[in-house]
Structure formats: structure tokens, C-alpha cells
Length: 456
Ligand code: ADP
Image (tube, rainbow, N blue to C red; front, side, top):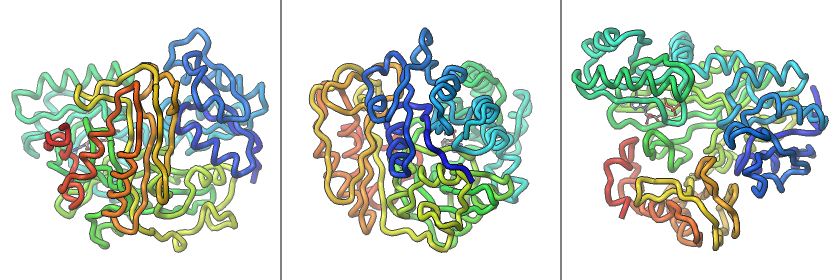
């Protein structure tokens, strides 16, 4: 067992601040890194110490500057690094460099990043653990896909093996579209992810996206914190998340949670991770694992009372799930209570193809009250929203005894916000919260695309 005294967050925005808060409560000193463009950003001021990183590099590359970050950590006696999500969170080289330098990487081992960073390897691992996967195949050539489509029928989806963030996917409806989409998928995969490896899956019609939160310690103990429903998506990216799901039977929920635990146990996984599934017509299919903290972890924290980020840190220190630390209880102690919803308020304009807006926030008044949690990045009056980073401004999570109460609370909170000087998606999110399909749990991954009234 080790004691982490000083932790550096290799990230920015709301997740950096979220991790600093977890550290401070655990008595750990916090270190921020910031790019030149982020000199005025909130996360810089929320840490005990802050250092400029990636001088002379592009804004995005600053947070990807492995050697620069390691240098700052070494010079300032940092004993652990938390990568957050995005940036270096799934970078095998970074995890390895931390290990070489004797710095604790708060996350899984590099071999887990290796398996789960590659969706083809992840599918194979799931099949080995006897978990149903979407019918699919690794493909090298166009003919492989054509053959797969002949056997399984259209539509199919071509996906980048190293893809993420909803990018690198192409749906193919008919044979005529196949050739062009295959070439495009390959070249997009190469440009975005540095590898043109793709695979093909049957495109499941109108599924729900259900994912299971996992915690695993270094002693081989592993638990789940139940599921989240992340079906409300735009361009395969999550917009609204709900925990627990309103539409799973107890039997299906148990089966999905068991499958997730089984897979992670088989992989000897360590730390926090999420196993993602598609659910359709009473059946579930594995799609991928995210070997890191996720944006939507907040709602699981709200319904279980477990602080997932603190659990990550305690696990990294060597504490056991069955140990004495309340932040990481054993499976029997995990109960869910009520419902939680998270909305991602972004600086995007829903009336203009969700184009990110930039500029200065002239008015910022946030919501509040019982049963609401706000995780904000650069959200304050005078903040400059730059075009360089993602457009997430503040995550709003609400809790209610019932799903309807959580949704009503969310609508009230969204209406209470006043953000001026920059466009946001708040009006769009209010429309989602009010929509009968949403309130009746009748939404699936096609909901946003097939519901034009959400844009009014
Ligand atoms: P990423 O890693 O980019 O998030 P995922 O594999 O997790 O990609 O898929 C993201 C979303 O894309 C899913 O939640 C779902 O909406 C859609 N999707 C992915 N694969 C399929 C499929 N085989 N059939 C239908 N929808 C899919």
C-alpha cells in the first residue's frame, strides 16, 4: 500500500476540477497543467499548484505532451497522475512512461489499455468470456464486407478499430454504397486515429445504449455500480444520460451487469472502467470497453453514493474493495436509490448544426437547489470560450425518487440558467426533457435524429 501525497491531473476543464476535489477531500495536494491558451482557465486556479505545459506546441498537443508532463511531475515531486478522459487517458505509451518513472498512473495497466483501446481485440476478449457481441467481423478487404453483408444482410456499420468519441463509423444501407463507404471509413480512420484498421458489424436498428460501471482493485476483487442508459445521442455521441435505465427488466439488468463483471474479471482489469452494450428486443450485445473515468460517471455517483474518482485513487494506492475505505464498498453494499439524469450543456448552437460557438461569456448565472450537482469547466462571467478544446461547458446532474421527478428537476434547472454572450444547447435540452417519448422511456439511439421538434 502506498500513500499518494501529490497528484497531477493531465487534463483540463471540468474533469480536472472534479479530480482536484476528490484529492483535496482525501488530503492529497493537487497539481494542474495548462496550455498557453488556457492561461485564464478555471482548472488552473482550482489546484494547489499549476504549471504551463507544451510551450511552442499546438493547443491540443500541449495536453498530449508526454515528456513535458512527466518532466513537470518529476520536478515537483508528484507521485501520481490522473489522466481524466480523452487526451492521454488511453495512451499506452503514457501509462508506460509513468511506470518507468515510478509515478502511479491512476487507471488500468497498459495491457488493459492495449486490449480495450482496440475494439477488435476487445470483441475477441468478450467472445472469449462468452459474452454476446454484435454479429461482426474483422475485415481486410471490401470483399470481406460484401461477404459479411450477404450472410447477415444490410444495414451494416463499418467502424475504426482504434476509433472513439463517436467518430470513424459509417453506416451502409445497400450494396451500392459499400465500396465508397469502405474507402472513406479507412481513410477517416487513418487520419483520425493513425490506423486504417476497420471492422464491420451488423447495424442494430434503434437500440438502447446501456453501459455498466465497474470498479476493480489490485487484489482481484471486482464490483459493478449498475448501469447507465446513454441512448440519447447525436452523431453517436452522448447528450443526456440516465441511471439506472428505466426500461430494463430485472433479469436483463442482472444478466448485463454479470456479463460486464465477467469480462473485466477475465481481463484481470484494475481500476474504474465501463463496459458498453447495445440492447434491442430483449437481447444485449457488447460493443466496447472504456478503460477510464467517463463524462457521465456523476449520475452513478448520485444513485449509489459511491465516489468513483476517490475509488480510483484509493485503488491506485492499493486499497481493497472489501477494505475499510468507505469510498469503495463491496458488491452487497451497493444499492441504487432513485434516478439521476445528466445533461451536457455545451457551447453549441442547435439551430446551426450544433456548430461550436466561441467568445466571451458576458452573463453566467447557474442553477442550484436540492438534488442538483454541477460540474463546470470554464463557466463564469468573463470566461473566454476558445475554439481549441471540446465544447462542454457544464454538466448538470439531477436526482429524484422517480425518473419523472429527476426530469422535472432537470427542466427546472435548465430554465434557471442564464448564459449570455455565447450560444448554448440549453433550449434543445429543455425540449428533450419535456418530450413525451423521453418521459415515457421510449427513446433509443435514433431519438434525436428522428425528432425534429426538439430543434424548435
Ligand atoms: P465510440 O467508441 O466512438 O463511442 P461505440 O462503439 O461506443 O463508439 O459506439 C457509439 C454509438 O454508435 C453507440 O452508442 C450506438 O449508438 C452506435 N453504434 C455503434 N455500433 C453500432 C451497431 N453495431 N449498431 C447500431 N448502432 C451502433
